[in-house]
Image 1 (cartoon, one colour):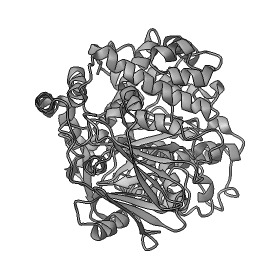
Image 2 (cartoon, rainbow, N blue to C red):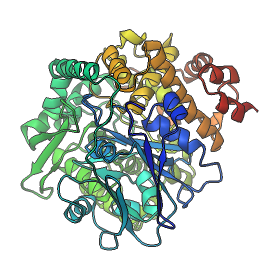
Image 3 (cartoon, rainbow, N blue to C red):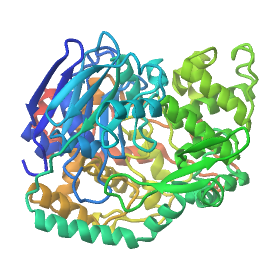
Amino acid sequence: MHGYMGKLLTVDLSDGAITVQSLNEEYVRRYVGGSGLACRYLYDMISAETDPLGPENPLIFMAGPLVGTAAPSCGRFTVSARSPLTGLWGESNAGGFWGPELRFAGYDGLIIRGKASAPVYLRIVDDDVRLVEADHLWGLSTYETRDRIKEESGGKRTRVACIGPAAENGVLYAGIMNAHGRMNGRSGLGTVMGSKNLKAVAVLGSQRVPLADGVTFKAIARETREFLSDDMSTLILNATGTSGNMDYFMLLGCTPVRYFTQGEFPESSALSGAVMAETILTGTSTCYGCPVACGRTIEVTEGKYAMPETDGPEYESICALGTVLLIDNLEAVSHMDHLCDLAGMDTIDMGMVIGLATYLYDQGIISSRDTGGIELRWGDPDLAIRLIEMTTKREGFGELLAQGSLRLAQHFGVEELAVQVNGQALAMHDPRSISAMGLVYATSPRGACHNQSDMYWVDMGRPIEALGIPTTDRFGIEGKSAITARHQDWRSLGNALIQCTLPNPPVQNVIGMLAAATGWDLDNEKALWLGEGIWNIKRALNLRLGWSREREKLPDLLMTPLAEGGTEGNVPDMEALLRDYYHHRGWDMRTGKPERQRLEALGMEDIAVDMHG
């Protein structure tokens, strides 16, 4: 199996059994790797009765066929399980160096089952795999854990993916941290890891990824790297990070303000990547094999938000902890981001649940009696810091915040005010500014997510013409559903390779590298066919887990137009978008099920039989 190590490592924490199994080649040829392959394996393992925080919920780490190769910006890995936050398919991928190291150790994936009787961590050094007691690590921050395990497990080349106190305490949106602030942040997969008493997975390897045509692969990879090094978007990302677009996004109404209820926030300019570069930036960081180096390294040398040199926040974190809360102090937002990293907690869900609580307080729906005497208000970073610390420990009002936006709103009987889809808070791109994003959020298999399709870039002037994905009127709906579906399919393949969504390599180069690595016969339409199958297996799993068609919608707050700002009063026509989308996808409008004929055309006959009999 060229492009693959050919092995999965399976660990049962309940009895300590460690086994190695061969990759299922049929699954690989259809679902490729990453989240696609992980979902196909998970489909065989769980049902609607599976407790997300029970030992029966497998936690799957999966790499892809380009991970650990010379392909630029393909150094990622995916973690998947049934999400405790949404109850549905949970996935989150992260950069850094952990994914390539797993491949160097000889494995394409890792499946964790059961629950250890006491805290442990897993140490993998090629074929030497063992569980190590971790009582001494329980309660430590993610960075402390990483450093301690490196000391114990072979030095700085060891790569560590670990959880922090938030996961140990059962915060439903806790993540898994590795490298320089690289986190599998969404879906609460760190919480699943914590429920298994698994503190970390440390890996060190010495093997190489086998390629079908190494000469061709290296030539295409070199050409792609040269292209990215000269690409304008790469240069901007390197200079200012992902928050370098803050001012432009705010101008278009894309950036959320005051929990998505306000259209303008001029003070947001103080949070931009340009300001960071001029003030607290000390350097950049990068992931394996990536020429972009969009990661920020910062230091705050004085004042109450002072902190030593550490990883800086990116756009999503800056918005969730800044503009959503009307906070314009970059040092304070960076401090809040650092606290979330130490705790191992998703910044998007954290900022959004504080935003929801503040909005409910502002509207008189809750009072200080509900918050334990805390008076919630906009624009107060010290209050937000206090709430982050309370949430990490699940103390006082933090117990409610730790449950996420949907459960908080349900607790107070106002579910319609939670800006979320299927239990996961929205990312920081307002669909009133780009209508296609409404469709992206509503149909995302893991709850509201911008990484399943970043259509905001397409309609801001970055088309993918080779795949029939043009830039269109950002407020329009004509033809938008088919374009969005094709973009989702392309991103689904990217999340299987696994490729970062930030760089902008030519389509033919990406497909060429996959073909040279695996020996597969590929073209543009076959690549989209692979992506569409991956999109549909996630849909099939969610249907098995109890998802229903009525849940495919945007929250009420997002269907309320804003009088001011770059959204220009637009609200996406979700009924029309979804109707066209279902027709294009070959899904039943009433049930949301993919039709038998469509599944069979996608080479998913087994899923068609399971779904339709």
